Length: 309
Ligand code: NCD
Image (cartoon, rainbow, N blue to C red; front, side, top):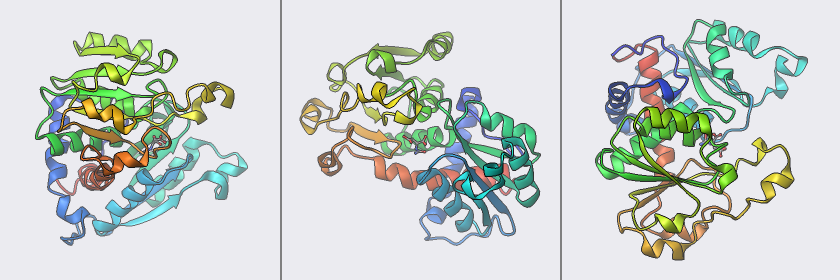
């Protein structure tokens, strides 16, 4: 399957064959990601990171993946120290980085920014999150985590809870899952529910899903509970966001009714939505997700750079 030279922009466009191929490939990188095996697969290659928005996991795991594979890293973690502060456009910034690197990871607050970046340069662009649209590498690491923890994806019931409207990783995950036989539950306060355009797309794909307002309605049914952060920075103002603070906290007592094998995932960072006590339960998998992100990003870099196929 040919990923060499390709951009990774949105899971909306991926087929099941492509997803399975990426997940199968990723599995081979567990040892390298964990530092138990040395690799020079990307010796001499350079990754550029262009982060116009804050990041802890996406940027560091992309950089760590490149370093684990013997490559190098350039770029910026905020636009302040770059010519963006002088008014340089996203396109010109990316075009410039493309002359110094072999692959670029871009994160930006605007929907469609990754697509614009990809148009501006010949090197592969990996979308590290474009506004409230998509976060495809997060979606892939989430699929990878589900498969690793559950032994497969078909036949599962997955609840995606919280700020579904604004959370890009929720969109990428739902699109990814739409390729499998999965029942999806979207659990959110009404104003933060799945938006019409995406709902129409899921219907078109024949996805089995329900929209609910309370976790209690499904906690005893689901195999995976995927919790999201209230994306306060994407609200028109703080007052609007405040209304939803604390509105979907996963209290430990809620988990008493959950299946023993149910896993809780979160793209992180988590705030009030998952209390610390939940970390100690056998359900918590969000920190494993972080490591899986490194594994998956190793595979993606090798695929788009043609180091493996
Ligand atoms: C998130 C992001 O920026 O989309 N984090 C991540 O990449 N794991 C989610 C968030 O900020 O809530």
